[in-house]
Length: 333
Ligand code: ASP
View 1: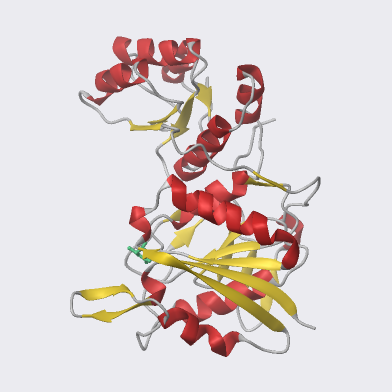
View 2: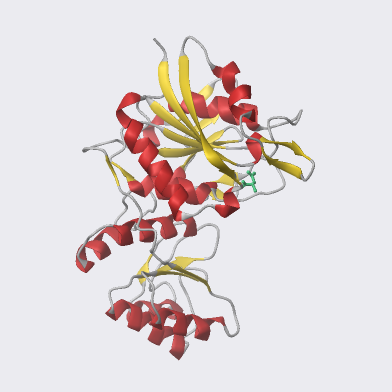
């Protein structure tokens, strides 16, 4: 018997059809088109969500639905394929990477830049590669299949809205390349261990994403940080540098005193926060900001959200924040 895969179809360009208003999700269209993938070696069931969304509308409740659907069917299937819009695909992949703990099966997310009904759609190859990956019983992580590469979900970023090469993982190696033969990079795959557990998200969690830019932003972020939230990701310059702006630093210190983590991430696509590389990185660290090393903003938002949803003592939460949990960051020795 072949592999048993569960497909969860949440929306996105891939399943859109022509409507009088332009391209829009059309219920039933994608499930009908996918029948051609059924074979002796691949047997899948598909759940089409009642509200197919453009993924720019994704909310914590949508993530909870994906988490609970995978948890509910975890033991009945060999792998999972999630069909999703590209706009927030890297966010969803990151959330699942932290929420599906001790995963011992593949969870593969994919979509496309052109809908399946378009004659040049990239969706067919993306789906074919996603199914291949979902059949690898030693792939124990959340991954993203797109334009002939397989990427670690919590390392992936949408980098191109104009070509088929929509995604990259600038700080992590590729997990597979799909050519005439498939080059599985098994040596960099994560090894599953422990008992699978799914963490539901607290839908009230509020994380502040703060993108530093020259000008008035730093001061206004300071007052946001003084307010109510569950943590923040501060996207600083270069290797984690920021102006020594008093109001910003007071905000970071206030949040840290209240055990609301402020993660310092770099806004540069590639590279890491390295506290001490420049003197300009010290004030943030001294105010209590924690280094996010080379984590993507998508992974940082997901990690903070999942951690805020767990009942953990502040010290335990901080310890988990600073350790590599799902392959999301490299910590310098
Ligand atoms: N706006 C679409 C979405 O994210 C884009 C896509 O799927 O490529 O749902």
